[in-house]
Amino acid sequence: MFAAIALGAYVLDIVTKIVAVAELQDRDVSVIGDILVLHLVRNPGAAFSVGTEYTMVLSCIAIVAVFVILWLSRRIGEIWWAIGMGLLLAGVAGNLTDRLLREPGPLRGHVIDFLQIPNWPVFNVADMCVVGAAGLIIVQSFRGLRLDGTRIES
Image (cartoon, rainbow, N blue to C red):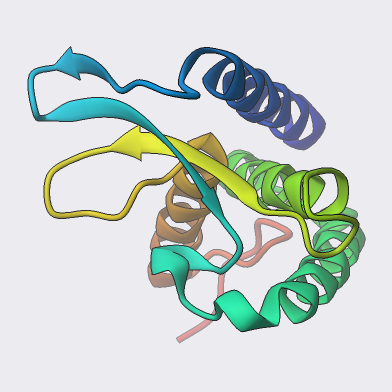
């Protein structure tokens, strides 16, 4: 389940970014009025374009995060943890792929963002995966379920 979620969400992120770059170069597309607009942005920073001068550091942190997630995945013993960790890996790896392969060069590449909603920064599928993963991981923690599926005793 972990691998299927991670691979599926990663492929969805990469494909949507390829389409966004190909189709949104010089135009915006209104999907649902002003509620959802496709608007291409190349983001050198983290969420909310914070830390634009630390792109290489963010890339290195993402590389470490991918390896930590893969190492932890060996212990997954519960379906919701598998989904959450799969989404987390897909999100981190999706944005890392941009940082490694896009201009201006390896470890400095800009992340492709293209989903715009009112009063919120432009984001992408990888960002949605990371946020979804965070939500699932928080819920599992509140439920008292460890990564391996055992319960935390009170």
